[in-house]
Length: 450
Ligand code: XIL
Image (cartoon, rainbow, N blue to C red; front, side, top):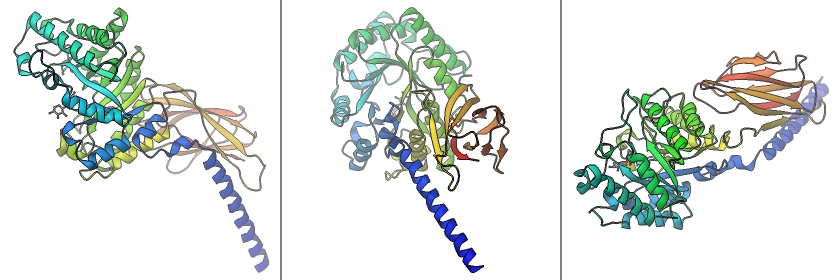
């Protein structure tokens, strides 16, 4: 009896060693890209950038600059390239603070998003009192001068900022610029294109995240109209300032995807989410996943580095605390970026292979490919190779739920998150529909021989 028990335990030990080796092989086979340890490096894996707003008066703060240099590869001047900063007196331009930010970024190999050429807010005093054709010319001159000065140095410009009204109508915001005529926006875009033909030209706004908002529809219709008439527009920025009264919408991915389908890039330009802990972390994760799910969502910018740097610091809406420590929100964004962008290459597949010790050598491979997507759900298909006698587990991340399957009759664990699928005579592939509930990440798979 004793001998038998010993030999049984020796067999068990050998089996678990084999399993450990098989597991190690799986880890080694995983893409090295999964290991990025900064926001920029993680975003770059899918060809995206991760940026932050920078304030010139913080460039002497070594903690601030340390995080900036380490984590971000895109920079927006928080205030220093706005109309009041760059043209304090009519016809007299001042670029010194904008240049400090731009040079610091470019010296570190980072790119710059210019913000903002024309806006109803933060206008210099002289402009606030202007109207009619004098204001129209002054605005166009400002766009031309500033875009020309920074020609070749900025990746993109927010050419026009916040020109649509809040509330139900979906129309333009009243402003001195709007009162110069409805074509002021396209005039600004044309002037910017002439001044810097290689900068991407963006329209930027807030409260345009929810596809059901009238404001979102208003901006969408303008972009569609611009594209149809050849008005030069390359991108749409979503500021993404969220709080409990204005949470991340569950249809964010739909909004980004629908704008992208017009033939423009989309970008999250001023992200901050008031809150703390895991609730805040989940919302940041949702925004990151929404961007990753859209091929033309080219990057995310947060509106500041530490909570104490924020324009609404009492809401602690950023990824680093006041001491520069990484928050839970930071980790959730980094992990989401490391999980990969489905949008860049929708046919990319994820593969996990596990060999069961003592069973058929060679094991099997389960390959995931993304299927159709809707606002609330998406399809996934799995193809198995290596054996006809497979057992595939599909693990979805809460709050996702599998709501339909085909070509298999799965069993479930008690959490409802792990589905075990076997062949049911339909061949070596099966599929399912996942209701995402705001989480767009792909399921993880294991394959073993049954
Ligand atoms: C904010 C800055 O963060 C503040 O420092 C400043 O006092 C006001 O402007 N939408 C925009 C940004 O496009 O330019 C704003 O930045 C925040 C809202």
